[in-house]
Length: 143
Image (cartoon, rainbow, N blue to C red; front, side, top):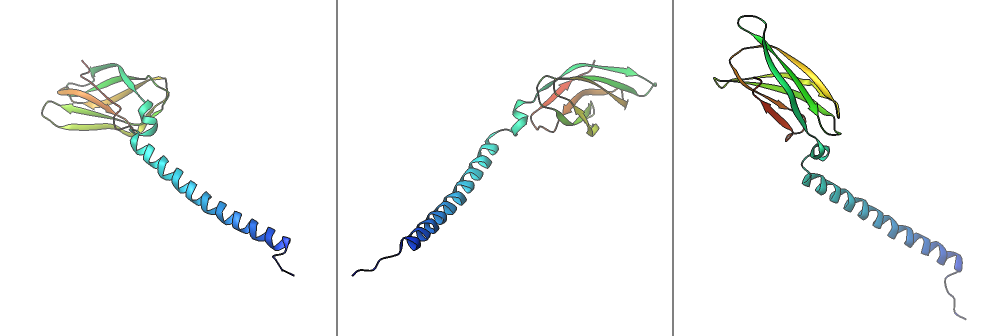
């Protein structure tokens, strides 16, 4: 008489082999998806930033003293992405650049917001606004 593997042992071995293959496939699939996701994110300009945009709605200079003034800037966020770390760069005709509003100003999605920049020398050339999104900027001469 021939002896074989008992049905109970065969079932346990079959389950063990199946679980091992499932674990290997699960590890491979998660690594594959993670690498593909990272690759896709690298291809996008900056994730949410590809859907961000704003414009300078209005910008004007107002003298406050004989030697300085203030810029009143109204920005309009025209998309559904909140723009963070709004930084204003005041570019002067002599080539110097003065950064203002650094890092604390935000522009909520689909809203208009006013910013005032004090102590601006009247000899400025233009104003450049940058955000946390590298390609989302605006420039205005504010005249």
